[in-house]
Image (tube, rainbow, N blue to C red):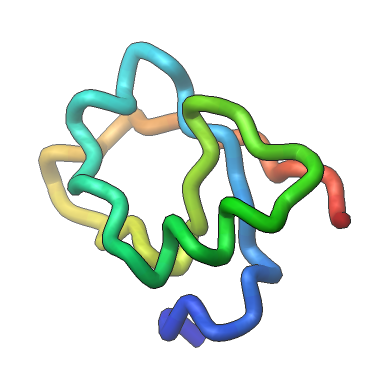
Length: 65
């Protein structure tokens, strides 16, 4: 849904892309903080706005908590 309300869309962004993603906002950080699978490159896919600048970005779907 894109609202970061459920935390059901965690992914691992390719590490060489993390610097190109927008910063994690407080709502996203709160949800990720509760994940058992949190890694430095964890993001919620619903919070990554797809733009031309992200063409080629690879993500891996994280396991479910």
